[in-house]
Length: 331
Image (cartoon, rainbow, N blue to C red):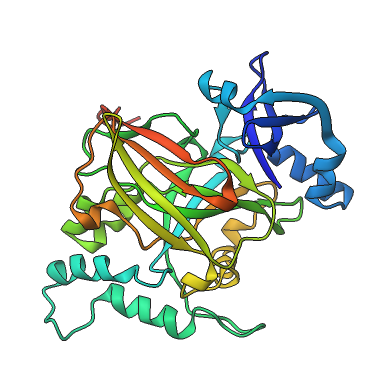
């Protein structure tokens, strides 16, 4: 089961279930997945039951929604500042190679020494999938922003003019809401482009936090079912109507050194992330980057990420925009 969010013909937010690659069935009187989930929690029913109850008779053309620019991100919060956007790195088998190569240069380590990235990766391999009831190794964690940083599918991903690079990261993202008591509940999963500045990170691995403070995109569809253990997809960059770069990417627990339970535990163990009514969008990492193949992106290039369990591909063009900064004034 997959959901999308979109703007209706009356320009109001709406939710629909994907019933075919070209057709959407509208949920009656539902304005957001967040509201639908909170309603299900209050009633004590499953999200799938809530979806089935809300299905109406109206159907829409998926292609028309895309052509008219009415697609929204499939997961939002009515107060964008209360949607935490975070992620984990070095979680996928093979994901440490490029990072270790970059950081070896900045740390001036001998070839025989392990970089901090490789040490953390190996800790994940050794202890990222603990037995039930046990606590596993901590993953790398980063803050990306709040709901204001989430760009709708098909909309431009704005790269600030101070950025050194504009690179895609094809990932799976988990979507969560906290109930009225602060208990987190997983809503589902979406394809994600965890857009980052890899050149800034390469200067010094302590700049990773800065490199992650960029917009991102997920969707266009939200998968309500369990995440497959093995996911095979493709990440592409289009330029002037031609494929500039293409590479398969793998995800799902079979291709990861951390279990999803472990990643979730180490995020939600913090009381900060268990506040009633908040929502969370958490990226699970990747091992595939065009940056690793020396690709230089530019404004107008289009990122395309697809994997069969998630329906339509996630597509976003790059846009470079002036950073809106001004001197800080004393009050």
